Structures are given as structure tokens and as C-alpha cells.
Length: 342
Image (cartoon, rainbow, N blue to C red; front, side, top):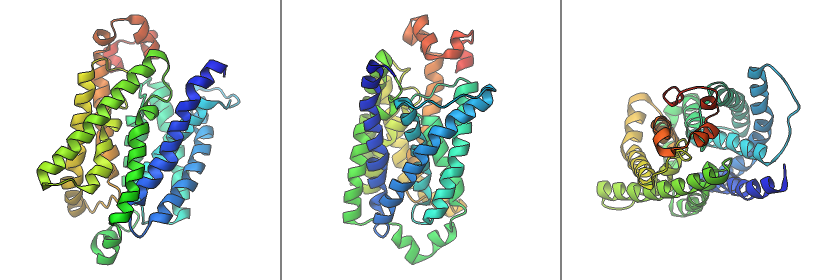
């Protein structure tokens, strides 16, 4: 990499690294009987997932392209490694407190193999643009974890009173977890814009700040209306939903009001999920989602994908510059229409 590229990517890589190891690590400390284990597992497994993502993700791209070459290491590759680690940590949130270190290690390895293949097909072959990882990181990690959760004693976690009680937080553990939430909230614009450059990076930062700020307000407002007070589970999680939902369209939206609307809707839906949907799914299908990854990552991730489709379809009007559109969508530069890209 040249000197200018290093100066562009290195500060953002540091921010993303902080999110993975401090943000996710301390957010998972909320379990009152699992705090040390949570942050320790997060530290170790994220380090492993980061390294194997750097190898596996380019490998699948080479397989699908039918040609193999030496993997070159640079700062963007490290950022891609952090993205893979983020997907694994989202999965970890669904089974937190119910798995051993070796189970998590094996699960993380399997997940990165499938994660790399999914990303290579969607981004490489289909040309789907997902700058902030709403689809590739958040939705994938959430539903992989939810699927895995059915194999980690869900009935015991729900029905056993002692086990169920240990899956809750207390004053101290939730206070420490708030450190993780604040770190994630602060550095989310860097996560979404880690691989963006130039004016694209500016759009990502502005849209993400507006969206995640809106989700913080609406999530807290929804909890207040429903309960008459702020709910700690909502504050720790749903306030971040705007960062997830804006991930796919974060480099495509050019109207600040739209970014605010995306974040506001995600905050409401996520808060509703934590307050209402969690209990319903636990009762009806036996889903035990320790950290509520469905409501923070899964549903907002799907929303992000849908908003991304709409943003792509309207890119011609929003950008007003064919060169900018073609630099954003490689397949459009090769002749694909925006409707097909959407």
C-alpha cells in the first residue's frame, strides 16, 4: 500500500479493532455469572476468527474465479478479518453462557468457512454492495447463531429456574456492559465506512452518525412509552440498531432525513423485539437468544438489506452522476441496469 492509503485506512482499522475487542467484549459482560468468561472467550475467539478470515475469504474468491494467487497482506485485509470476527461474535451472543470454549472454537471455524463462501458469492459473483455489512456480517452472524442456539440446551435454559436466573444481569454487570455499548455506538461509523474512500467515506460517516443517533432516541422513547421508564436491555442493545440498519445503504443515501428515518425505524423495531418478541418466540418455538441478536442484528440487518435495495434503485436520481454510480457498482459499469442491481 502507498503512504496515502495507509493514512486513510490505519486510523479506521484501529477504530474497528476497538469495536471488536472492547465493544463486543464488554457488551457481553452483562451476564452476572458469566462476566469474566464472556470477555475472555470474546478476546480469544475474535483473535482466531480474525486470522482465519484473512485466509478463507480470499480463498473462496479464488475458487469462484477459477484462479489462485498468493494472498497479500495489507490493512484492508485486516479490516476484512475484523468483519469476520464480528460475525462470529454476533453468533456468540445467541449462545452466550451455554457453550464451552472448545464448542465455540469449532463453531467459529465452521462459521468463517461458510461466511467466506457466502460473502464471495454475494459480493464477488452477484456484485451486491454491502458497505457496512448489514447482510454479510450482521444478518449472517445473527441467523447462524440462532440456528446454533437450538443445539445448546434451549429447554434447560428456558425451563430451569436456576439456569434462567443466571442468564440475567445485575447492577454492576450491566453498568460494565454499558462501556461496551458506548464504544460500539461511538465507533460504528468507522465500522460501516472502514473500506470506503473519498466522498463515499464522508457519506458513510454522516449517514451512520445520523442513523444511530436516531435509533438511540426512538429506542429509548419506545421503552419509556411501553414501561414508563428506560429499560436496560433496550438501552444496551436497541440503541445500536440504527448502525446495523444503515449498513447496506450507508454509502448510497444522499438525504440526511432518509438516514434519520432508517435509524428511527430500526430503533423502534429493535426495542419492540426486546420488549415483546423475545418472550413470544421463547414460548412458541423455544428460541433462547441470550443477547437478543435477532433484535439487534438479525431484523435490523434484514431492514438494512431492504433499504439498500431501495437506495440502489434510486441511485440514479440521488447521485446524478453516471461515473459515481459505476464506481460504486462494478456490475453497472459492465452493463447491468440499476433495477437489476437492486
